[in-house]
Length: 222
Image 1: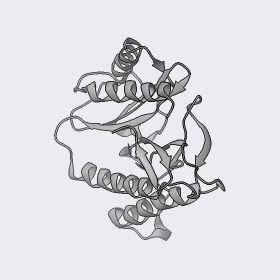
Image 2: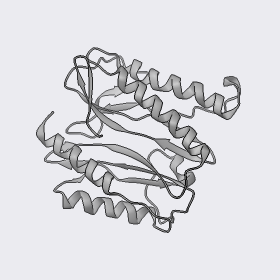
Image 3: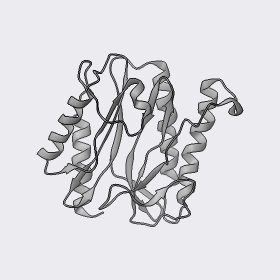
Image 4: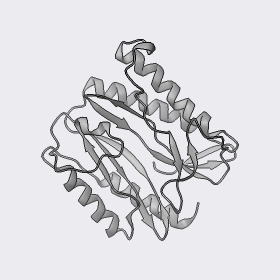
């Protein structure tokens, strides 16, 4: 990987690891702190920071608001750093207070889907198959968790693609989607970011960056 992108990854990872969220903070306050920390490390945000709490986390691209975070809410944080022309991108979930069984259940589904998708990444793999791996797992278990039949599902709970390339641009080739006909090549840096979004409750997304290798991939955002 390009050393400049490696530093962009390190900045994002350091900031995310340092982040602490408490009840009473606003989404905007958290986003402002993230921006300051990225800049303090020599970078700048690679995109508009996403901080979404509670039911607002159903929007994958929610803008930070003045909304005060409450105890018992999940918080989605999506951030990235740009360093000397190269970008990074990472999403993590936080829970204020003791996580509920419902949250832990859906988190586990997303975590497993991401793990399965990452394990499918390798030189020569079709991008659509990476997406399909994560999507199939989420779709199957979401129906089971919601206690409904597939034909009765009101809508898709995984509402975006599984990932994208990251380099000088935050979103670049290849696109990890069902519609993609592209194959992965060794040296490509991509995100793997499955999610679940449920009306009236909110969302969960986990995003990591990986570098494609001949026999698999290297996880960059541990």
